[in-house]
Length: 328
Image (cartoon, rainbow, N blue to C red; front, side, top):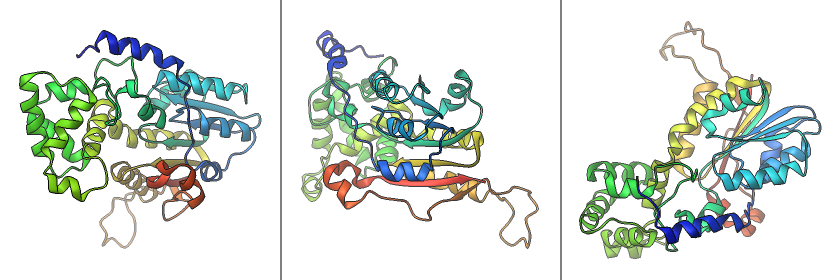
């Protein structure tokens, strides 16, 4: 595994001094979706800086809140924020697909509401030393859990070219994935690719100039997204986390998921659809014989999106979609 240079390590140690700013996306919509009631138990699977968690804590009265995250900075920020609101809030370090063990660790059996705010946080993007951004120079890191051994430099410098191409194509939906992977492979033969700007330049040079001019976004955006998803195993955790959480939901409890790109949204949409209509009988069967009954119902047929007012204040909410189901 790649070690971060000592200069970068000193910069990473300074991250504790950076205030964790968290603007919760679609806050009022999420609170309404969760239908928060006094005395009930709620889970925030992606605590971040505690924006959603604090809002839940303010509304749950004597209820309980369990907030999950794997980012130590997020955990510290969330713990400070929710402890000022409620004595009945716990923050657990784990990935959100570990929700069952997290609930067991704090003695919680069933729950009444659960929220996911998927993807990378604004704080992670805006903290250069974390290596998520292609706009500033930093080590190729991209770990949501800074204690993890595996980082973006390992993906970029050790993955076979064919596997790199697959990841960039699937997770970044990048049509020039093969060209980008080949250019990365050629560059790392000369010297390891160590920083974000190095990688951004390599990606930029791999994409034809005409294609770069035709797009408004940075040419490295999709590749960085793909590598980040690979490093953190983001997509693989979504479905098992939702299914595990729904199993713990009490009847009438709700599950709400905010997604930010089509890869996440497709997984959430498919998982909710399977829970709404789990029947496996052939379409031409006149009656169901498999015995599988609906587990949830959709609260809204179409995903909820951010208001125009919110988009003015927080442009990053532009791609956010909120899907909500209720346990039957």
